[in-house]
Length: 470
Image (tube, rainbow, N blue to C red; front, side):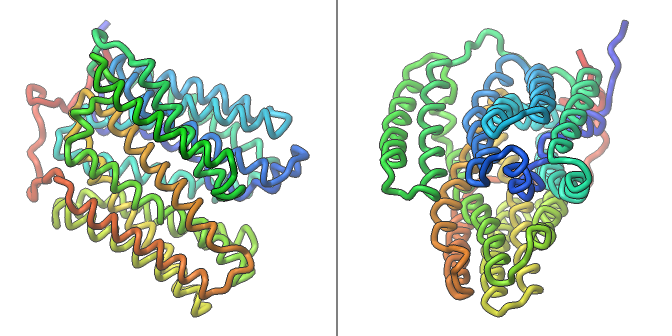
């Protein structure tokens, strides 16, 4: 029987079904921590690890899952990842304690680690190179809009039923993604003659994992805590060992030649200074709205909602901006928007002005939405199609490192008792860090997009308008 053929647009839409389902719960889950703690007889401090621990696991395992996709095929890793994550979502809905909930979430996110790089790699494999910014923009729009949809749908459902309904919905969405993907998604290039660098993976996991855990815990227990100090000392030693090992092994997890490329290390570095102040700004905004304006949790959620919505809209239109102004100008504009938005949030607190806060929240979201797609496109071109999985995985890992550092350092400078002036000062510091991203990201070599519409491809072109499943 002849395999069915599908257009690149169909492939893209199917891949994004899974992406949407995997990011659906994160925002509303944050708002439901108190309810979860009460239901499981725990504390909010403990249940916070329902979010923190899975994010750490996701950050650590994404580069390795991306590499497995580069070797064994991204379609296979996409299916395995979402099947495992779907099963664990249903398991999560039935957990009976904080410990089992955290463990189930960690396993689920470990499976999900392969899905982001695989979805991107599959979508990019069916489009030409100069469409990569558009693809990354659509991917970013979905990952941002889905949590916003989770707030709108999940919030009322939690009030009517229980927080467990979130994971049942997520599991159904992921199973739907698996069924559609098995029928539609094409195979990508495989490199079966390559072996997976297990020792490199262990060293990277130990080094990055200990660094992330130390930074994450420092916000709660202090930078002078013995475990935090141990993690900060242990991490660089292991990462140096990882670098030395990767330079000797024949088939490394991460090629040092790739990391030495200017575009690659600048793209990775840009994520530290974009995600750090951006994510810290989210926490600072929530604390500020509670402290200065005395808002409730539901009011804070609505105030923050413009951030993911503006991110989604800007990300979806990033390709058009690159086409008109170029990648460098677009990213500089985006990072400047993050900086101005963070400063505006602080000014809104100082002036007791909700409209200024809302403008700042929307500007920060739109700025990050504009920045990310051109950077992803530039990175994937620099690493080459055979390393897209591990390349985008590293980008995600550096983004998580930046987020952990930004939240731990900047958010620790204020408390619920802080004054409006103190919030303004810390948010101005965050804005200054975002300006560093302007310099780093502005030096990246971006993919040019033709200013005139591209002619429709023929089946004999380097890429095809139809995609075969097998």
